[in-house]
Image (cartoon, rainbow, N blue to C red; front, side, top):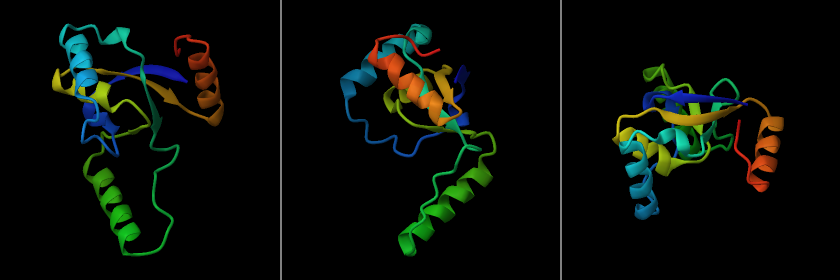
Length: 125
């Protein structure tokens, strides 16, 4: 896993809204507004080459989703990463026009290692 700072147009979020906790968003907004985004834990992402979350089910709804996602990717070539968690942080950083701190998971092992670090209260990367 590697740590990076990304622009908002490089990240694809599959469910940004509604924001579930306005207070948390306000806290992150203040942190990024003050230019202190490096102190927050990074948001986990995967590169689109790792796997595009297409729906394998049959039916009109699944086909519509897959078509929209592929069209989005075609129209947004800079969007390279899928967000796994951290919509409040990404929203706050975007509103403040700041980079978004992320950790890129490249394998299942990276995810398992990160889980162990979090359980021990240690920093990712």
